[in-house]
Amino acid sequence: MTTRTLGVVMNGVTGRMGYRQHLVRSVLAINEQGGIDLGGGERVLLEPVLVGRSEYKLRELCERHNLKNWTTDLAGALRDPDNALYFDAQVTPARVGAITQAIEAGKHVYTEKPLAETLEEAVALARLAESAGVRNGVVQDKLFLPGLLKLKRLLDGGFFGRVLSVRGEFGYWVFEGDWQPAQRPSWNYRVEDGGGIALDMFCHWSYVLENLFGRVEAVTARVVTHIPERVDEAGRAYEATADDAAYGIFELSGGAIAQINSSWCVRVNRDELVEFQVDGTHGSAVAGLRGCRIQHRGTTPMPVWNPDLPVTHSFRDDWQEVPDNESFGNGFKTQWEMFIRAVVEGTPFPHDFLAGARGVQLAESGLRSSAEGRRVELPEITL
Image 1: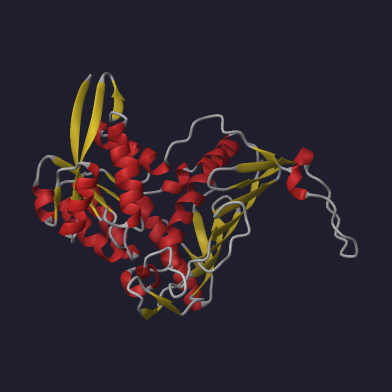
Image 2: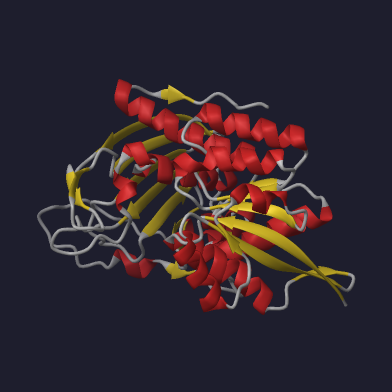
């Protein structure tokens, strides 16, 4: 067995998502399992180099996980020839400059979404990576959720017939920060810091819809700020300048229509924090983070509208649970493994910067639709 080590510059892992999902549950988990098996007796281990602004936080993380490499000097980390990859989990406004540095240093780049704040910046990064010949990828973690993997299985098996519509509900109540602490960082609610649920979630919906049902060709959206004032981590009240709810209608190639509500101002009355109902000519399904329930046309009941009589039928009991049939790993870790293989083997990576740019395009178009009160078409992006 031959083992090689790949240096990975990880920027922004002192934040919640960068630390929990990318450092601990992905990179360190890959090493704990003995690396990535490439076949033919070859494995790859990852050597994380933690980068950030706070020496204290970086040192503490390294001590906690017995890591040896950290620095506040991004340029220095990128100059090191042992570091082949750059990963970015910073706040969005800091992302474009750092990724540009990494590409110019000849590093392969993997990044959290959104790729950039604007479509123009996102396309520029995609073109720069293409011309530099480096592998590039954007996190598209929701494709690897067990519930959506089951949904993909149903689609591939022709369960739905012709897909007619997709209805999605995402969100939960994020506390304002006064009488209970908020579950999300305060920058999420300041547009000047790259916040806003449309920029955050429409990037997700772009790749989910595209990979399962068809590319988004047009959007009609309404974004709002329901909670105008919140309280930050230091107990200071601040103006919430970013949208905290977004309601979108997405027209897909192939004719299906998707409607997705995204909100941090909704109390959950569903089985999971995100759910998608897919209706087709032959069957329907409701998929969440982990579960997926189906109803075939042969077992569909015949509801009759009669408001004068109480409903005694349990419609939920008419649905059947889709079995797991396989072991589902952490979606973030799965995509990390895919990207590392693409880098080492020199193979294409499907969730690249161009796909990330389409996510930014959808968010930007949704914001424009809301501001101008109209339907916005999304032209195909070319490099």
